[in-house]
Length: 209
Ligand SMILES: C[S@@+](CC[C@H](N)C(=O)[O-])C[C@H]1O[C@@H](n2cnc3c(N)ncnc32)[C@H](O)[C@@H]1O
Image 1 (cartoon, rainbow, N blue to C red):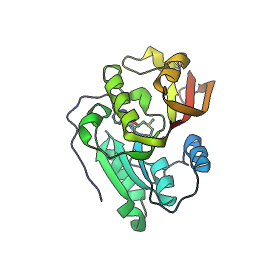
Image 2: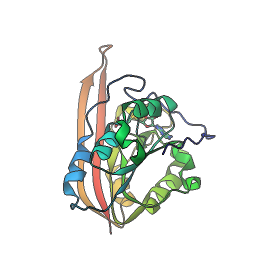
Image 3: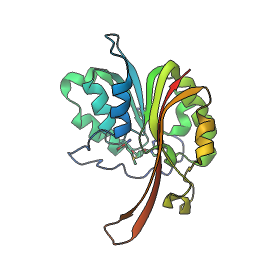
């Protein structure tokens, strides 16, 4: 089932990595680690992939027999995901072309897992609090969150409208959750143009109480 909803909210969505290409990168380590933590079950499970991009994590979830709602504001990213999805897994996938700011109005069901790999920092700060309140609501009791935040020392702090978080902020966001993993990594990476980019990424796996 594929549902495309048009987004009416202004956003600063950047090109998703690999959108439009025929290759999708490996699933993110936080998702792989989360799938290892989950108890085996034969019951169908439902995940929301927020800012799915070209779909590395969505494809991994589908291959583990999850039903997935893959949400992104970039139509090219969703088109790439759809071309990469094996025909026999199409029925497990719903795509939503939507900005994070529209999440509250989207009438989504509760999820066993909300995954947000490298996407939350792109939520416009003025939309973040209602967006996050909705993310918390959408995770069912004893359901999971996994994903990434940018810490305050990331170079993204020099760009307008990026959503960065201190460690204290992140602990606050997960009030009412058990933190299964919280790990911060900072590194300098040389860019193709020779400049150096400092990244500060905080990875989180959490379970709703
Ligand atoms: C860095 S990419 C990560 C993609 C994918 N999760 C991955 O790990 O490869 C960030 C994704 O978030 C999406 N995104 C950014 N801002 C958004 C917003 N406000 N609403 C919905 N999607 C957004 C982008 O279109 C992009 O696909």
